[in-house]
Image 1 (cartoon, one colour):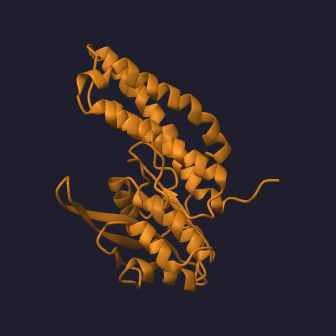
Image 2 (cartoon, one colour):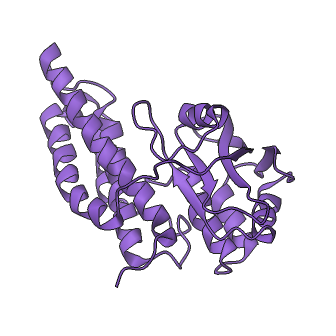
Length: 259
């Protein structure tokens, strides 16, 4: 199944809550899914996810911004270093997009503890909160840019799977490739207020990330070090396009409407 990272769900549903577009309880359910009830920890005066969102709403915040940093690409991270290191370590985080009445901005990242088995997985999630600065350089990829880049990147990723012939090398691959290629986001991945274009871009971007993950699991039919390096470089570029598209689509609600 393809899906959004927890931080993407929190940013999308949290923005809808802050703008009065969805009930708080519905957003909490959509973010938590089958996890244990999410808690809040750190500098923020909240003990669970509902209190965290309610506190931000009471403070006057109007939107949440997603960041998906990776080594070598930390655009959107605001500082201080303590927050940046944690968000980079887990590869995701959420920022309040504006300041409250006292000039404060918040950042959170999910501290996830998984338990159970493959058949009955479970997770405990604590949103670790910290006061952060204004991001020096927000991600520059627009939703229009992302949509243009995704079609070419998706073709490249599917071609990589074809050339690797992973379905022949691994018995489980054919079904997984079909699920990723043809799958759709769960119905509760996004609030109904998400613009249609953003929904479309997100669906494609998440499928693309899933294809890259499958292609990165092994070398398939690649037989030389040179081929393996070339494949890695190509997939890294495709993954970056998909990751930037997820960020642009989730954050589209925060951008001014262009007429």
